[in-house]
Image (cartoon, rainbow, N blue to C red; front, side, top):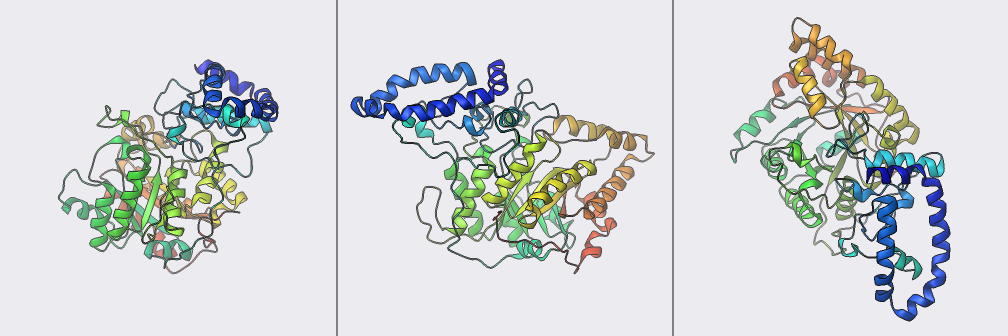
Length: 480
């Protein structure tokens, strides 16, 4: 099957031309379809279409074909059903996080898009989530009947409601350098451990991220933990992963958390379940992060659910997303980031940065598109106690890139913990000097004391306190 996908991508230009010819000719058969009826036409065309698409594209017959937008690489082959670019877990060799033997569908898509057009489009197209009602139906029967189901998202409508910005949003909009930290919810209904972790960062950070089943492991829900922090006077960022919920459940969770005072949400696709403590669990992936952002933005600005049904009151949400500048397909990472900003992301938090040069190259492309003016770019940083632990993370945590020179430097130190802390502080200071970087996000499982010490030692909180940068956010989630 992989050989089929490789072949279709290598011949994407010819296949795209063939598609264009067929799309122009197909409507001529509309009178015939009208004569025999749409259902009979679908039954007649479907077996031929399935055979041809399976032969050339390993197609899964979603009924909403987007091959012309994805370089002839079918996104239904993605284990996470990503329809708007790669997830953050692509391996350094370009293979899939879930199936290491398979080349990432979106790495292939970038190759196919280049085959068709020469370069990636400056204005990427945002694709709608799959409509499950259309599975196993013929796309070409609808092309012939000129009854095309939309697959691209319409431009975001103008907001009909405005909300007063909350604390974290105000900080991001002020232009001041932002510092956030990540905390894992407890494996207990007792909030004491959660609050103890949060207090380590008291006065040191602008917000505390609450992970949502990170690594596919089960903990207290992110929404509940964020509500506990809110009630205790902290500013949480509630992570929401698409892995575990369909579009009904995720909207309900956002509304529930908002009812309890949570305002900041980080929209994620989610990690692979097979690497967590419940590998037998069924992943959902009804949405990807871009689709989730669009739905949450519509709830906030239009006061409607994804179904179009009106909300009694619109929630006041400050929306974020993630980016991974350190894994292939590198060229498509900027396009994917742009899709997220256009979908509604107002702040971006990246994967761990151990390679400042790669981040600087990424930020150069970010500045070329002006994305840093529409969303606060907050770069992920962290440290581990030993070179052995760092190597383990590089090989087992999806999407993490650790240059060998960093590992060697820590391994050669007399105190590996102290050297790791030194590198973390150096990285934080170096990132603050890169134009467009709006803050740092500190991560480290059960390493809160070390991270809090690094924030204080870096001097970033005092150096930037009351000193706004020249970059302030422009229109919410609007990227021209």
